Amino acid sequence: MKKPLFVLTLAFLLLFLGMAQATSAKPPTVKIIISGGGLTRAIEATDQRILDISNVWSGQFLDGSKDTAKEPPRGLQRYEVSFYIKIADDEVRKKYVFYYYPNPSTEPGYIYLPGKGETWYPLNVGAIIRDGQDGKWNYASPEWEDLIKPMTNSG
Image 1 (cartoon, helix red, strand yellow):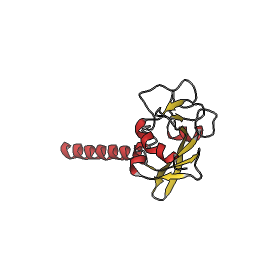
Image 2 (cartoon, one colour):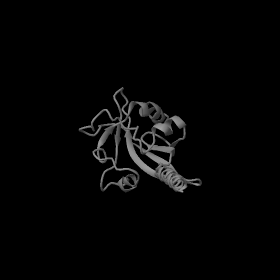
Image 3 (cartoon, one colour):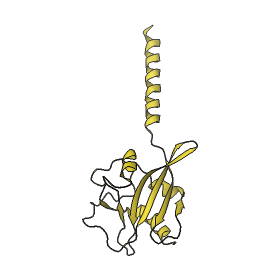
């Protein structure tokens, strides 16, 4: 008599854990839009390689091997990068925005994550808070920049 109760309890527990994991999964980034700088029109990026490295929650666009920059870049063009997330089957929503400053030299570009009191901060922290990086000048990861920087030169 105890064995069926154990099996039923175990099945319920596995079902519950599976549902909890499914609901905690983060929705995918389905496009990014780059505007500003020297572009005559916004660029929409949907290439899967770009989307994989542009996942809002993984933060692979940031170079985690470097501390934030001490000073803002001078003389570099600013691009606004907006991340769009698939919320439901028929709903895509802007979920994260930052500013990208590509460096024309071989030096890494910069990513500025808006901080408290700035326009995109409330939207961004609705997705993820990056303590120590929000409101700071961060370096772009080389892998992300290799895919994005050429797009900013297409003016």
